Image (cartoon, rainbow, N blue to C red; front, side, top):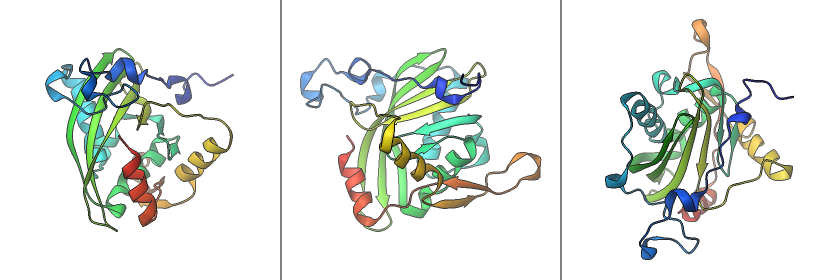
Length: 218
């Protein structure tokens, strides 16, 4: 039996077509999704929830700090097609590691497409400039934040296309290795009152992998 506080129980698998389909067919991809944010259509959030989204976009932009990391529950999951981080400290390594591989990362625009008691779903357009190749490219994704009763993020899913991804077999093993072992980044994210330095996760992809990763995203 899974623990009551197990963040894996909070995973939400959104329907990308239902959440992002544009009435104008010309704006959709061949798979009938439109991951490009349209800020003018964004659902207005209350200040508390807007604060969560603002913190998450700052983390994507490489400005990680303890206050922004506090939007996550202590037991939380970050999940994308490349990595799976299953504690807040490992997630911290993901965000603190961005400046090591990106010369610049900035949020260009967002669009909140769903806000329910247990979730916030938004489109994100992030522009990345890798240190190794120094070209900039905006990439779109669909971000789902699953929330607990205290509005803490328990499960952070980042989808790059219309397909969700498996948590079984070799693929899950490789994602967990990316999250846990391939690269350890010392972060300044404190551990309780003693402010201990935490080991986090962040994959440092090769030049080729960075370029392929960016080109495959919406």
